[in-house]
Image (tube, rainbow, N blue to C red; front, side, top):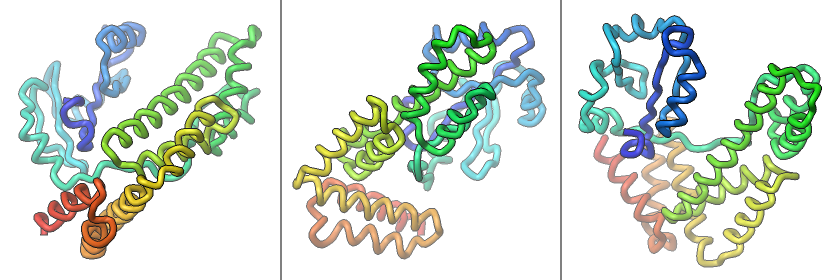
Length: 265
């Protein structure tokens, strides 16, 4: 399901009763050994069983983008067409603003936590790497430091993947955005340097300037859709499909988005 629908905005969250028959360690082992890509929530009391009206294991619910439960049953019974129907009109969230991280760290590393929260991830990473080598750390503090480092590594992997997928799909403005976020957040880190180099190469290519300009307009149209300004969004999309940007790869995406909007009325 994740493979098939992830790019359309579909998210899977598994829930398990840590503290029950399966301790947290076994849950982690299961996730790793099975290569699970779904998010896993650890819920000791399983209050969600009652919240969703579940009667046994395993049970699943499909929740619409507006928070309404639209289907419940055995996970194997969830058909693809039901998911497709409830993904209609969904606009997949786009990255906004700077990359920031809010994490619990030992009190002595409050300054590092502040750097993470303010978006200075590269410098925070250096401090965390140094902290990880501190043999005076308690086991609890060491776990917090290690969790923070893993979180930062996941962000680097996620944004790099976002940029590379955008390049592969010829969405150069989206790639530009991802590389920019990485370069800014990871100043002082190899990931920031690598992102800055990718960004410079992308921006120096004259052949891609029109693609980036077209992608920027599509991004503006998506913002207008989020604000409920559908008519304005259609005009913005049509400005990509006509005139000097009409021969871009992004123009095809603008055409598709415009057609979907018009079909929705």
